[in-house]
Amino acid sequence: MAPSKTAEVIGAGLAGLTAATALAQRGWTVRLHERETEIRAIGAGIYVWGNGLATLEALGLYERAADGAHVGPVLETRDHRDRVVEEVPINGPGQARVLTIMRDHLINTLIDGAAKAGVDIRTGSEVVEASPDGGLVTRSGATSRADVVLAADGVNSRIRRQYDIVAHRAAARQGATRLTVPRRPGFVPDRDQSKYIEYFSGRRRVLYTPSSETSLYVALVADEDDRPASRIPVDTAAWIRCFPHLEALLGACAGVPGRWDTFQFLTLTRWSMGRLAFLGDAAHAQPPYLGQGGGCAMMSALGLADALSGSDAPVDQRLRDWEYAERPTIEHTQRWSHRLGRLNYVPDAARTPLLRGSRFLPRLGASRLRAALTVPTGAGRFAGSAAGH
Image (cartoon, rainbow, N blue to C red):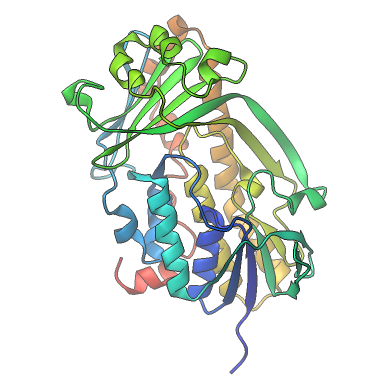
């Protein structure tokens, strides 16, 4: 019997864990390096659209990931007067699927899936060099060589910095404070409790996202140079002045631990070199306005594992084939996310009719949901599909 192919994966986020699990399920020997001493989720809740859900189904992890998740009936956008200006029905027949899940629950689901698949997870293992010939060096001086090395080490990828492959990178003018508060009545009217709602006022947004029966994910979006809005801990009075109808919700954010992140946009000239590939935010970071950063990372990682496992071509050719298949949808989604960020700079009086008019442009809506409606490449060729998920 021929020896199994070997893979070294750098970074235990959504992309790295998905790729490691998918490759191990297809018979690869996989080692996953995480520089921290434990794998921790960064963030609060997360939107997982149909492409991400299909990835979890393919890996046989959907049931656990969806346990306790929130299933909303609609995505609403509201203007500065709390009027509904856009509605996207979801989770019904013929509609896009989306669940909101606590990020730590999703990460733990993927960790357990990786361990079950036989992935060798090495925490406290910081990779400082990786090369197109499959070589790898850790901070401790250990070296190894594999059939493929996958750098999923985030938007500030140390491995990517070793190569001149960034086509475009820009920190957006906007960012968000993300936090989790306990769900309770009174934050929004009873009829709105189960909805996902994005509120606009001036250059600020509030995202209301139930993520479990007991947890609510709140994102406070503003310009980076809007000091009162980007302050940690949250300056609730500054936010209530813009959103008086959300006083109860915003008041509940007082003193709650939060994290401010400036949004990033990143494209590469190419996603791979020889036997070294970049994935997730290391390859295609995007602002979160479509909720697709995680879904695109997982979908692309599954497609990568399928490309590497489904051909006898040289690894570098398989990686190029993977990029050719995945890049159009992901870059389409990146562009959409970037454009939606511009809505922050449209005056309230003009933004309301603009968003109301979008309902009369169904092709625009389909373009916006392109990634969400995409079936990940190779989804039927993994463990979950054999189990009937």
